[in-house]
Image (tube, rainbow, N blue to C red; front, side, top):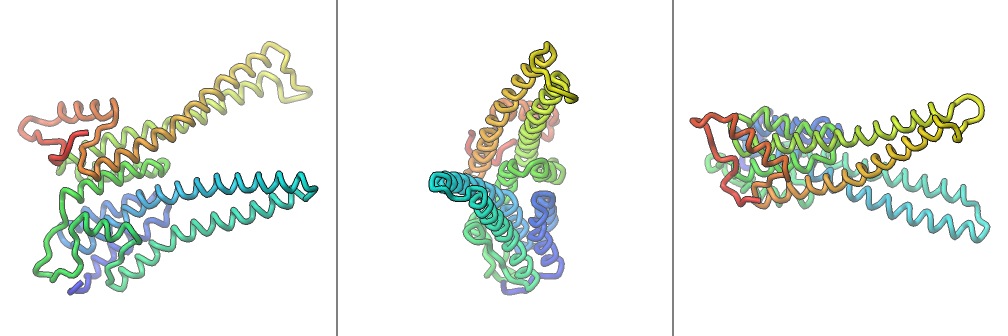
Length: 320
């Protein structure tokens, strides 16, 4: 940039990037920083939005890569263990070696995830215009951000795309259990009265993520409930009795609860995929509405909005 960022601009940029080290809890900080700086500093606004993208979209990519790596690792470990067992090798020792390799690999992935925000914070502390690999330059073009503009020539970022980016990152944050809801909640609190688009997208995202989170705990509760009934039925003192009426009842309840938990666990990844799809559609210019939830939230907002203040819930984008 032709003019060095001010201390205030640097502080917002630094803390927005470093908030990624909290693994989800700090996702609200980049939104707060963007809200405070969007009319004051293009530099700080861009850095805050970039930090928000890293914590939501970047975290999503990191989780998916980690999951794929875990699956590949398990397949390789089982294959190697089977081959060692057939050849008379020490399977336990081999499994221990593979587990050590995987733990080291996982720690390496965590270290890589932490490395970029630290580099970003140091770079911003020095007044430089940091860009995350791949995402940074793409986001700059999306927001029409040019760090080479002279101070007197600087204009605001593309407001339409700012709002869409913030809304989309709220959708992407569904993979951050519990804390991911802070993104749409913070956006709703800060911009619920300023933008109908952000108000609608934030509320429907918050409701959708809350429902998905509740399903996690329902699955856990069903499993624990059935397990406790099974223990109570068969008895924990002396010889367990599965042939008694209470034992059979506990076994049946446990089987049913386990089946329900399994079905819920299968449903949750589909809900996560739908959340990612919603974020993608919003970024592409569509005014996405979740099935059923979106229509209900839209109707609620319209009914709560006085006619004198009624506005378009979209950003004049394409309907979805």
